[in-house]
Length: 325
Image (cartoon, rainbow, N blue to C red):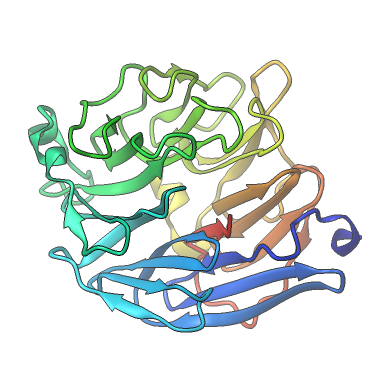
């Protein structure tokens, strides 16, 4: 049933990251296929646009592919721990590191740091609770409608914004959550942005300048993954747990999945499994969830029902998902 209903564009792959593998998943009339696109230690995050794929690693910089993951180039940055990668609509490539620095490569030029991030007044107060002497760029979100607009989520420090391509940054945005985990823009509606964080969820209607809390109806406070329905800007998804300990206990992690209803309140979805939904991505009405136990599920009806996607093998949590845009 899933293979007949799931409405992914046939040419659009989905990339899934575990600690040791990048998987390229494709959906066609016959169902899903999955192939290993990269094998390497300590993979962390992924971004994709067209045939361009970026993968961030811990202690190894960035891996970049211009042919959909067939061949790879190693990119060494001044900081080796890369916790976030992104690709702008204009083709700009971004990487965020620990400690918190953002690097960009535009128009085929060399990678350079967006040094203005270091001038943000709140930076001396940034701190990652498990290792309070440091912090990192957990998420980078280039605006698909404005190549000069950029959101940067610091764990733990908040949401920083630039409207001039990173030449300058404004400090933590009013109303946004401080423990930033995931940020997203709506691909079709300009100005709509979304956040999942350890201290809840929030959304913005004015290009990320101001934010409003989005916590009503959700009984678990600690939000992690985020996906946005590309057809409906009022419908989005977060995974949540009772706290960081429950969310990050490896294969024993536990959490829930939520979707906003017509009244804007969160409603709990039937879970694809009892593990923590650790990574989410959506295309139209189709939703894919990567779990803390290494399983992958897809829903053709916006999370109402699920079917498991077969993988070559299970190896730890699925840390990140990216749909080739």
